[in-house]
Amino acid sequence: MNIARSTFYYKGKAKSPGQMKVEADLLDRIEAICLEFPRYGYRRVTHQLKHEGWWVNHKKVLRLMRESDLLCHVKRKWVKTTNSNHRFPRYTNLTKGMVISRLNQVWLADITYIRIRTGFVYLAAILDACSRRVIGYAISTRIDATLILKALRMAIVERKPGPGVIHHSDQGVQ
Image (tube, rainbow, N blue to C red):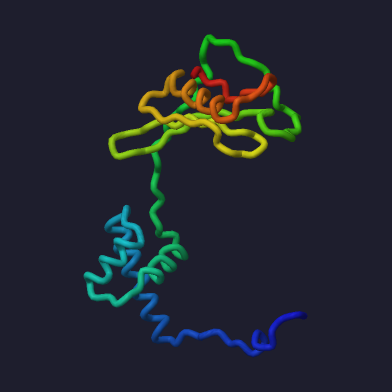
C-alpha cells in the first residue's frame, strides 16, 4: 500500500470527558459573546475570553468558531467601474477563439479600484496576454480617459509595439 508502518500503529489523542466538558463550556461562552457582539471576530472573542479569565489560545477559538459557523462575514462596498451605457461605438471581440502565441499580439486593459483611508483610487492596467505581465499602469483619484491614456502611453514606451497589436478591454466609456 506504500504507507509508513507507523501509520498503522498511530492512535490519535482521544479527549477525556473532562476536556470535552470544558470545550463545550467554552463553546457556549463563545456563542454568548457572538450573540452579544455580532461583529466580533475570533481575535476580539479571544480577548474577551481572556478578560473573563479563560485560559485559551486564539487558534482554538478560531477553530471552534469556524466549526460552529460563528465567524462574521464582512460585507465590502462594491464600486461599479464599468459604464457600458454610452453613445460611443462598440467593437467586435477580435480575440474570441484566438490562440495567443507571441508578445505584443494582444494587450488586455482594465480598471479597478483600491480602497484607501480617505476613499478610493482607481488603477488602470494594461497586460500583455502572452506573458501576463503588466506593461503599463496608472493610478488616479478620478476614473476618466486620461487615466487610461497614461497607462496606454506607459505600455507603448515600455514595449514599442509594431502594427497589428490588439488592444482588448471591457469597452467601458473610458
